[in-house]
Image 1: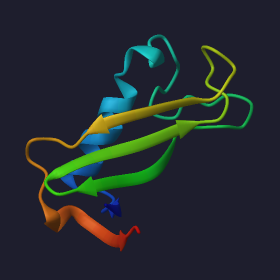
Image 2 (image 1 turned 45 degrees about the vertical axis):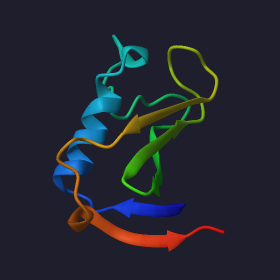
Image 3 (image 1 turned 90 degrees about the horizontal axis):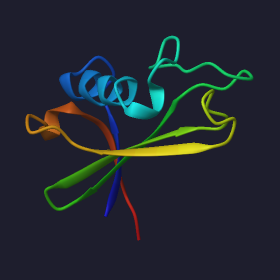
Length: 92
């Protein structure tokens, strides 16, 4: 398994942040891709790659709809390719 970081402003970067913004948990949240609450916002935690599978991980420490921590995970888009990876770290 590898921990990877997606290039900012890549097609995949835009895809995964759009997915977070449009997730039902963010319904009626002002600026859903940020979800500012108690100084906390959505954070990209990295992506995990195993073989051809990739999962992007996001966390919010105090989501405005629930006032508690929330994690979201999204599968990579069908158009994802390795050129959109900024950095790869092998995990043992």
